[in-house]
Figure 1: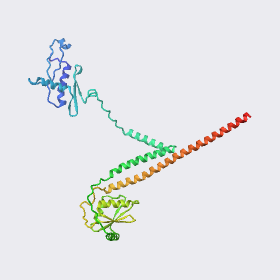
Figure 2: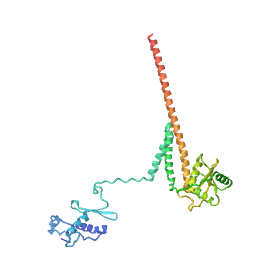
Figure 3: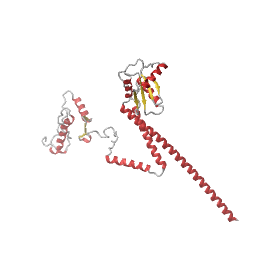
Length: 350
């Protein structure tokens, strides 16, 4: 009877030998399938049921530990790398499953569905739909729809530019104690005339104040006591902001500010050239140019937003006035009609 085993027995033995290969653990002994003594095949051939062979061959003194280990081994999913092998014995049959347990086996907690990745064609179609929608608003016969669309677009751009400019705000380093030198009126007059006569200068252009400007100032102060800082282009009143910022970064003294946006700086009596002539809390030349472009764009966008808001307000006033006139005309017409009706009724009665 041992030589004529059914196919069911071979399947269970093959699956038992497959477990150590998947798990990478210690090898297991081939398990003999547990058969019921009432199996019809066994009763037909008159053979005794085989004794169940344990999956582990424990030592004689650790029988209880082996049973507990076998129960934990097969009733809980065991992971090897990224693969989970689970043995399910419900219904009297052994079923092996490879992979993560389903939602019912994981405490009934359903994971959120994965976000579907859009194809290139669907993205193009979505962009076309947005452009068509914007085109309809731009060509709308109602002027208020057109103005509101432009206003919303300009406000979104304004918020985006403000968010961009926040990245270019250089953190200020803790200022060291600086004792500015006290100069008399005679010394200031002499230094002013000296600075006007000399031709050494540092330009401050559209980039504004950045590390390169302070570096050039220290290089000029290596051989000259005074120097000029020429600010072009410069908005009205911006030259005073430049003078204050350069005095803080270079530790120099402002002697005079001319009407043609020129600042005369004095290095000081006890001037010592610093080791790092470009302060670390300033922008580079490239980032300063990017900041200037964003600021210029923000300035023009803000003006455009104000213009659109004024247009919308004027249009709403015009619509209100038109409705008021239309109501007055309709009321006047109704009064004239009522007067004509009264005259006709009076003539009929006469």
